[in-house]
Image (cartoon, rainbow, N blue to C red):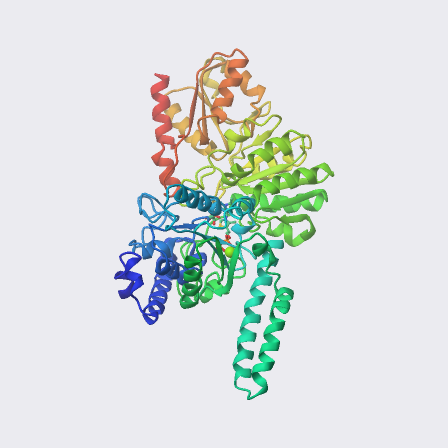
Length: 627
Ligand SMILES: Cc1ncc(C[n+]2csc(CCOP(=O)(O)OP(=O)(O)O)c2C)c(N)n1
Ligand SMILES: CC(=O)[C@@H](O)[C@H](O)COP(=O)(O)O
Ligand SMILES: [Mg+2]
């Protein structure tokens, strides 16, 4: 760590010798392994960009030059080189973000964790700089091969190709993986370019051998070299980027700082748009990561740094409940197909894919495309199940609305990581989906309260074939089942008025627990009942559209309160309030949910506490309201 501690900013890198640079890379790699194994985080991706990031900061002059890191999860080395040497607070409340953060440094620009937007940012910044006469400032976007499969990238490249003179450098960090190996034509194309590297190595070996061959050696080499272009085009059609008029440099060994510096300096001095194709290895230099076939330690929890084995064992997750039921459904119905946006394992589709490989589609990091493709699949009579993290549905809202719902296509959306996720920061919380889906005509939305309900809701959703249906659930362990004490129409009653409480007509408070907030609602009810309040807790299971049974029950209540892990604005409380008003049911409705703010990272529990979405806070508020 001795050398790293001397690097207070990128300027301290410029004077290092190549030997010192190599030593620094090793120091950083060792520190990443020791620190991130204690905090958790994106260990594999960041081990893959150690040398690349050092080279970037030696060639460019951040923050005068702007460095952008697509998806943001690969910014740990960048942080270490820009004065943030201590990663021990990574992803902890009040500590360093796991993504770039403007509050931490003026070297950081794009904070969000949503992939494939870096080239759009880059052309925006470069164009703005040009308009302001600052054409000596470079903009560099580092984008992974996975993020390169996102449609926005191709929208940006289309525009970038129109301005080939912009001082804009695109570094493709090609490690052949998203979580799993990157799929699709783009991945194949990059593979063909990588093949060039082997070809170049072979050619330079041939040149060395032939140059040692007297007399004929030179002529033979020239002849070979003449063949090179032809062979190279066979090995790797350079066309795509060059056909767009973009200069392509590479492939370059992304773990060779000197080679990266040479390429980046050429790109820097070129004075126009250049793509530098860096070949890297996710998890590089750490055997447990490079040996990990699942995802090369894409995102780890706390692990043993020696073995890479997890130190925390989590219980059966919400995702597991979904995954197992989908396999059961897949066995019963051959019309069920599944789609993922490069997250087959994290969204729980691997067991289904192992059994029905022809019925799973990994479309790359392309949620918009996934939803429109699902609409097409549904049109042919298949029942697609689109599996994305709730926050990433934001990307595909128009396709949900105008491709799926407008045509009443029967598509099931499984939104994992709904609600507060916490440690991945503001852009990862699944806090908007109930609001977004709530404005989609004809949609049905289920918020299961436990693992059993996930299975039940999924089974019901795949029977909905006249429009989109949604099943949303949070990250982590699903916890123990919450049994209903009885049904009122479509509603599950979780806590009933006791007999001696008298008739339902003088119900003080009807408490609605949405999804995983059912547990919170029960604790709130128990606190209020201990004060002698007459409280009933119900779980609608299908939260949108609002059930008429809920309207009927509300008629007899003094107040209604809804607890949801979605923004309060436009969420289920809003929907209930609007539905009651439309039914002329004049009962106050109180919404308890997530504030309409971007929430700094912390654990799920810490964030819930911070925003007052806890049993104590809600009970205190309701107690005051009940008077
Ligand atoms: C829109 C969007 N969808 C999904 C994700 C989840 N995600 C985070 S990183 C990642 C893989 C990125 O692969 P790549 O760009 O190759 O970067 P690497 O991890 O290989 O460095 C995915 C799918 C995301 N961040 N954004
Ligand atoms: C950066 C990104 O989008 C994902 O890698 C995310 O960090 C993983 O989140 P989970 O740990 O919830 O799967
Ligand atoms: Mg990758």
